[in-house]
Structures are given as C-alpha cells and as structure tokens.
Image (cartoon, rainbow, N blue to C red; front, top):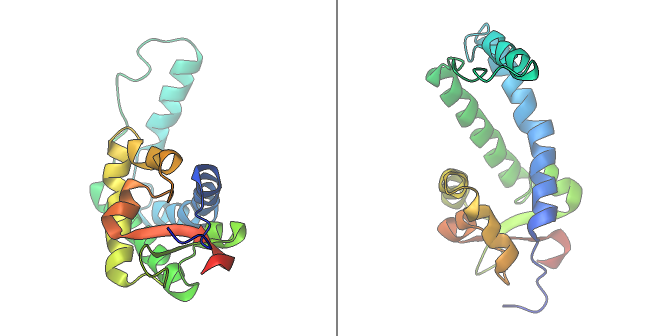
Length: 163
C-alpha cells in the first residue's frame, strides 16, 4: 500500500452515496416515473400501506405494490449511464464524490478507471447489497477501504488530492 494514498473510509463514502441519491438517482427517478405515466410502480399502494401501518394494522404489507420491470430496468440503466458519464468526465467522481473530494481509481495504478471497470463496479453493487450489505461493510475492515464491488472491478476510492 502506497503511504501517500489516503483511502476514503466508510462514512465519507456513505455520505457521498447519499448525495448521489439526492442529486443523481432521485431526479432520474422522478423523470422516469413521469415518463412511465405512473406505471413504473403503484405509488397509491405504497401510500395505502403506509396509512395502514400508521394505524397499527398488522396486515399493512399483505398487498405489495406492483412494479414494472421494464421501467425499473430503464431507471437502473439510466443511473448507470449517467454515473459512467460523470466518472469519465470528472475523472472518477460523481457529484457526491466530487462534493466530498473523493474519486474512484484503478486499485493498482491509481489512474482513471476504464469503462469495463465502471460497468463491473456498478454491477458489483448488486452482490454488495444482496449480501445484507456485507459487501459495503468490507470498507470498515480493510486497510485499503475496498468494498466487494471495488474488489470485483479492481478499483479503490481515494481522496482527490492523493493521486
């Protein structure tokens, strides 16, 4: 491990991810929802379930909202494409990462990631999440602060001023 490199830890990455959700995924989600004319997911059923739960009804989750997989795929693909554009144009940073001065780099050379790494890293979020979030928790226990999706894509997240 290079002593001049400062790896970004769990909480700074969590905060950057939260900002990306607000400034990237949420606006894309709103656009996709309106493009779908409300057919992406059944928002009325979500509201109904919340009302039932708030009233103490134990059957609040008996009926789940329907979701259109086509619109969901379009949303996921749009977020991936926009993220890859940011990684390419902002040298490894999305708006949230840029705000907190961290970026994604190749784990060995600390240079910009390529499209294959960006795609692998994005797809790697799926197992990181599906394993009860354990893929993300690796960040807290590794010296190089790499998550499962970083390991799969051979990437690392470092502070901008380091590479």
